[in-house]
Length: 127
Image (tube, rainbow, N blue to C red):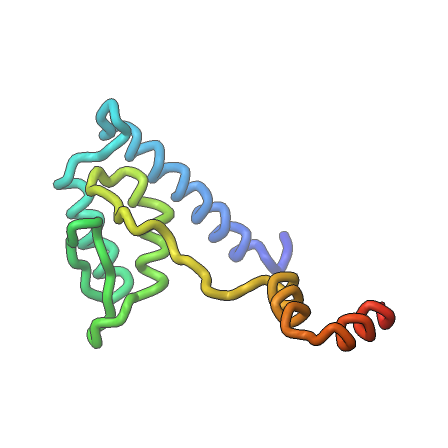
């Protein structure tokens, strides 16, 4: 028996719990792979109690907010990973987050384009 016995036991329970959840969900899915709306609604209520936040059904699915109206990231991410695939509510047509950041090469090319001919020659000699 190691000093980590209780942690390992809790980890196994967590992993088995996730597998059991998905196995139970599979029993309630229709041919399209969606669960009944009543089940999804009850799960949303369980989520808002567990994370102590507010669950609200929108046109694009359940959203979880803190008391001040900001997104509750932990609840939303867990919901999106575990339950959202079973929800028949249409997803946003907007898609996922779009990063406005340029990668390092794009920045370098843009900076290179702003150099004068002499600066370009000097830069190319340096590399």
